[in-house]
Length: 523
Image (cartoon, rainbow, N blue to C red; front, side, top):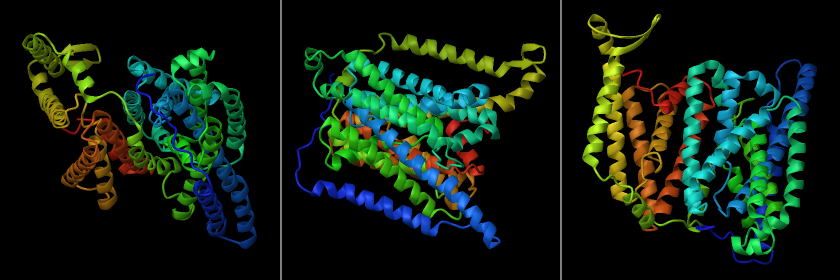
């Protein structure tokens, strides 16, 4: 495949590469001991409180620890499989849109077919995740699954799936709000049923990965060499993709979205000394289990009382942005010149005629929106006094949406000119997500701030995200792949901050959801 990267690093010998693994293990053991020592106790009469504390220990705390280890291991193995089969060091359930697709499918099921969701929530999540990764692969197939193209396609699919999920949540009201809270990746358990359901799936995934170990080793070679060794590439890739998506979808269906753990676990495995395919496949699940377990212990230790500081999935998602930035030097793909040439070849031959046609279509749409209305007796055209009554409600929204579209178009044009990248935009470069992080900070600092403060917070957040992205991409001469991946990394970090507030489920969450939906209903 073109645009692929090598995952190999120089061999290191001796003890130093074992130190990170030992430190991670010691941190996990220490945090769990501290959690057992300082966990809150049920108040009340001593005997009753002791019984309730024992119930919480055996039916909540210990199952939660077990589900963290199992989920982390499953996601670590899924990430290692995806990175190997796509030869892409930034492939994971989050960057490929698998998690967002699974969440959208579950949101649809819980909103419209709750009975189907109760029968097979895992199957529904798998269908959504596999559909998302299929779209990503279809979009990037013409470029030979180039790492940058795959990452951008995954971001686009994730944005669309997340937007549809938010739309459903807002449409269904408080009933569906719980879907978004669950989607932040909460590991809270009330019994051992989650562990019993997920542990056999992890065992089956490990067994399947062991059976696919030889093809996985061969996939490290180029396609022609792999075919010469008798490997059916398309069948092997499809099998590995199905296994990876099934593992991540199973975790998503059980505990929600655990962001970027599949990206972090293989990277940590290689940092701790894993070099061969077999070593990475063994070490990545261990690293994933350790990272998720440690993050979950810390969220419980730092949280007030019996509540967590933040959902564990949102906490692990904060690793995604910085980790993507660290991996940027290892990612190579198509050049800016190639992308610019492709864009130039698709310019319109008669732009004036196209603009006139677009303007005429816009005028017709505006006229229909201003006059056409649904009534009890069907659709009707509002004329005369009825039109005058509707105009103050509809015209401001039309003007606001038109102005917003024009400003976004201007912003995208300026960014494309400044960066020399024909697919740069506020969404791709992380500017929009930075605005969400700025709004989140304003809600945290001021509770329910005024519109002016909210606008200032979003502007500062967007500006900070843009400056960080420019500073990072400037070190590589504003190359297309560095610029786009830096924007994706910043978007991941900012959206993790937004998810932390969304998971609280209070009025601030609704304000953020309204912002994410881009509504003009208050204009």
